[in-house]
Length: 293
Ligand SMILES: [Mg+2]
Image (cartoon, rainbow, N blue to C red; front, top):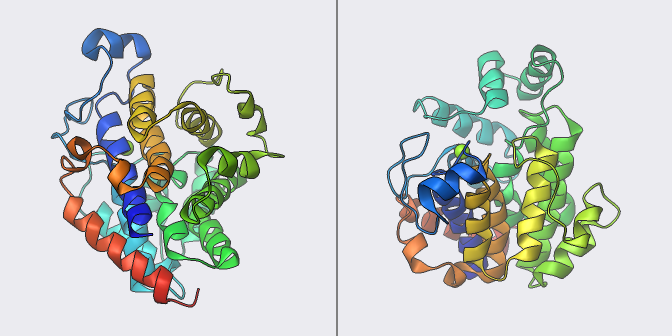
């Protein structure tokens, strides 16, 4: 279980750090600039250090810290850690989350609702899907896991499409933590949903952008097609668009499935925050095994 939990956290970070190089580029630009990007080199639009992570991992860490701080009722604690992160002046805060931060006045769902009005209902971004994995890592009880996943998404993203994607994602994560095969876990959870057509293994016709439905389509496609952890995150990075976020989301599930020891050490060792991830992973493991939820 420790290997799986650490694999999940490192999977998010590696997908983020690798994909951060190519964020907002298209495939032709990536081929021209990098050929097929295989190594964590930083640079890109955020001028990253090699191994530096972006908002995807930072917010995942905030969710993990909130859960560890108050596992019985983590939402307010998660919010506190979001605000602490915001106060570090990060390079990259997504548009929806930036808007919610600007409107927050002590009530997250109210801020999310007002952001929905301000953004003309355009709040189905991938900003909650990219950070929701620690909830599946921490809570064994399916009903608790689903409730926290739902409430956590509604803190910033009013749109039910965002909540739906987080729920499907964390249900897959839960199956992988229990040792289920990757394809079978995905098949079970997307059958009967809007993502079901991905089972035909055709690449999505949609762009790999920040709309949560598109993001989820690419995540599922990479996970169904790739044969190793490495291939999952490289596919995401080399697809461009919202590549760091797609890499983080796909990398999280791939990391659980292949385990931390299935992540190449040349990737894991590059992550600048690796010590934080190990400490958080161990705390989440303790919660999962000793907690009653
Ligand atoms: Mg990012």
